[in-house]
Image (cartoon, rainbow, N blue to C red):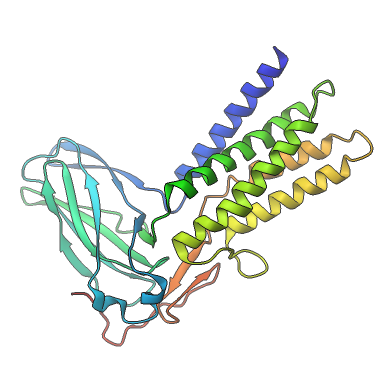
Length: 300
């Protein structure tokens, strides 16, 4: 019964942590509520889209390929006269803002955007109009979309599953560290296996598919996600070493707290970003605004 209680506590804490990370993540859809002509609408605006521009194509004049990516917005129970317009430009750049009118099929609004290189970004906002009235969404929110190459489900799902298990086991070990009757040896071994497999094997493969690099954390870059995984592993190895002779299980409590803290940092924060000036992907760097000689986003 006591073990069931400990597992229940660990599951609740882990789920809350994962939900918080997802809600605050910079690439997850942004929720908005707006009113227009007496109706209230709930929408989600994308902050991540797939692109089929390769890294090799990104080194050249990829705009001439005229590849386009659809962005969809669902507006439930939208009035028949509701329309949507999207305003965008590359980020960061001094491009002139481009305007595209959304195509509509029932409650689904679709705009075709020029595909960007992996880790490339567009900043944008949308404007809804109905019967001569207008409502702008996301204008002052620095709303951006980051593009990535598709990641196979056979790689992405094991990565997500193993990282969830790692956080769950870490939390469970932290909870039972205060009860000396509970065995921590097996959970610690399973934690190391899931953390290494999920974070240091599948994680880099996911990033390779999405942005073309296996590892962009220390010492090669400043990618926050990679560095979080590395720090979590170092802290847990330190806790295991500190607990190797004497039963100093408070090491585990500290390691579990640390892991929860760092994985509360939004996923993809300070992540990969395409530098339009260098025509390459960088991580954790301050990118200067790209000054376009033509001051416009090249598109077909």
